[in-house]
Length: 620
Image (cartoon, rainbow, N blue to C red):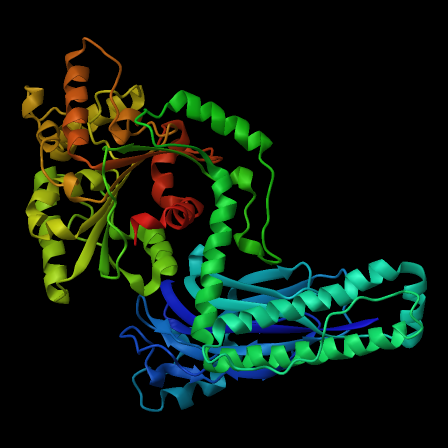
C-alpha cells in the first residue's frame, strides 16, 4: 500500500517584535522526504499598515530551490516593522508508512546589515542579489505531524527563540491525497482483517473528506457548489462484487480529496483571511483548554488567598499532573510539560449587583510600566505576547520617563508618567478609546498615583493590572534580608522612593505617601482591577501585593495597614486576585534572597503567554 501526503504551509505575516539586529530576514521551510512543487501567492485582503517593510527593501522573491521553499527576503530596520508575506507552498510526500510521523522544519535566515551595500541606494535590491548565498540560519521552529493519514489543520504564531524575537503567523495543513494498493492486497486484507482494513482506510479517508468539506462550507461565503463523487455505503463481506465496490469507493474518495485539496489552495490564494481567523480562534481555544489544567482554584467568594495552602497544593499538583496534548500538529519548541508550568490560584471580590460592561471595538491603549530602576525593555515579553495575541486590536504604550530613576518621589514619577501618557494620546488624535495599565512592582504604585492626573480619561479606563506591587507597603514583611536591604539603601543614598515604600517619609503613618495614596480616587473607574502576587516572592509581602487584610493585631503598623486595605478595596467594583506558583530552578542569588519569583512576573515568557491567553477579557 502506498500513500501520498499533501502538506500546505502558509506564511501570512512576519512581525519584528524584538529583533535587535538589523539586516535581511527570510523564512525557509522544508519537509524531509517531500518535494515542494507549488508556490501559493495570496491576494491581499488587509489595508496597508504604516509599519510595513518598504517595497524597495524586499530583496529576494519567494522561490523553490531543491527541497526548500523560501519566502521573500526583506530588510528589517525598525522595531515593530511588518512584512505581509502572504505566501505559501504545497509539498508532496510519497510512499509514507501508515503509522509514520511527518516533520516540518522552519528556519529563520539572516544577513547582517553590516554586510550590505548602502541601503538608501536606488539600486539596493540589485546590489544584494548576489549576497543571498551568505544568508545563514539563526533560529528555527519544528513541527511534528503525528497522524498524517488524517486531515490536519493548525495555526501557530511562531515566535522562534527569545534572542530572535519575531512572529510569523503560520498555517499548516496536511491530508492524504492518494492511497493506492494492488487488487491482491485488497483481497488479502478482506480475508484476514476486513473490519480493520475498512476502519484504517475507508473510514479515515471519509473523515478527511468530511473535514475538508466542512471547512469549505464555513469559509465560502458564496456557497460555491463543489462537485463530489463519493457516496457512503455499507459493505457486505459476502457480496461477490465487494472488491469492485471498494475500489470504486477509493477512486471516488481520492477524486473528492484532490478536488477539496485544490479548493483549499484556491482559498489560500483568494480568501485566506476567513480561514486564518477560524484557525486562530481554534488555536486560542485549544491552548486555553490545555492551560486550564494549571488553574488550581478559582473562587468568586470574598475569601483571602492563603500562601501556605497554595504552596502545598501546587507542590502536590506538580507531582501528579500528567501531560495532555491536544493537537496532531505539534510545535515542538513551544510544548513544555504541564508540571513545569506556573500554577494559578484566583479569587474574585465582586460587589453585589455589579454588571460587567460588554466588550466593544474601540481602540485600546495598554500602558506597560516597569519597576524600580528599570526600563521599558523589562516589559518586552508583555509587549511581545500582547502584540502576538491581539495584533491590531490594541496599541501599546511603553513610557520611558522614569527609566533608571532612583531618587525621585513616587508622586513626581507619577506626574511624569501622566504627562507622557497625555502627550501620547493627544498626538494620536483619537477620542473614542479604552485605556488599561500593566505595572510591575513599583510601576503599579506609580500608575495608581498618576490616576488623579488622568481624570480626563476616567470613562475610558478598562483594566488595572499590577504584578508584585507593594500596594500597602512593607509593614507585613517577614524577610530580614529585604528589611535590612531597604534600610541600608535608604541610608546610603537617601532614596526618596524607598523611604516612601517603607513608610519612613513621615513619622505619622497616616501622613505617609502610601497611606495617602490609599485614599486617592482612580481604581473605581476600572472595569477590572487585577492584582498578582506570588507566595514565593519575598521581595514584596504577599498580603500587601494582594491588598489583603492581616489578622487582628495590636501592632499600630498593622492597624494602619488594614485601614489602607479597606480604603483601597472600598473603591473597587471588582478585584481579581491571583497567586502564582512558579517552578523556580535557578540556583542563584535571586532565589536566595527571594527575588526570583518577583522578576518571574516579567521574565517568565511562559507565564506571560498563559496569563494573556487565559484571561484575555482583561485586554479586550
